Length: 109
Length: 118
Image 1 (spheres, chains in turn red, blue):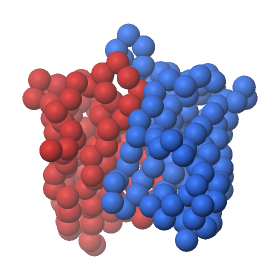
Image 2 (cartoon, helix red, strand yellow; image 1 turned 90 degrees about the horizontal axis):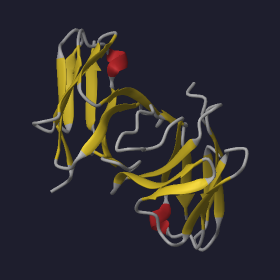
Image 3 (tube, chains in turn yellow, brown; image 1 turned 90 degrees about the vertical axis):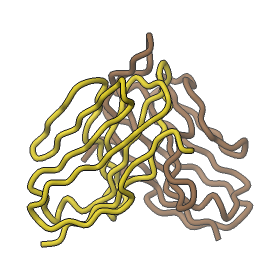
């Protein structure tokens, strides 16, 4: 079993829909990152969370440390949100990131 | 633009050869991380340097080595290349490193170096 599990693996949505991507982990962490990777390959860090909730524009990320679970929400999705979203956890007291396998999102107009 | 520069962007070479990938971190960032993204393994952490010293090691093969220079740029050396080494290699930088259990540093990724081994 992977230490970081994401669901769903693939997600298709119509423009305007509310989207949720989930991440569960089984190790002790000091932080969790949500990353976005576009088809060109570049990776952008969206959020780094150690507790609670963060919001940036139409993106919201939450984390529940007790349940070892995080969610990434996209409100009013847009075709430009189409990308792979990757959850990565920072192992406690280290600089080692463990990555989930990613969720491929396609938003159609 | 993340401020992290990786060169070369693309590299095609043959099995058995050696290549060097270069990363210049964001101005002021002291930590440099290397990651490998392959089709079958996904993203994996390779190694981290902080202010010139190795801080953490992940799934890095013995044929691979890295270093961080006094000007904080880093190089990843891949030798005796095999077909399976074909991958995207990402560098990321951060101001902080893990200390006392918490690394509060946001990560900034470069565009990656795509290595193809034929």
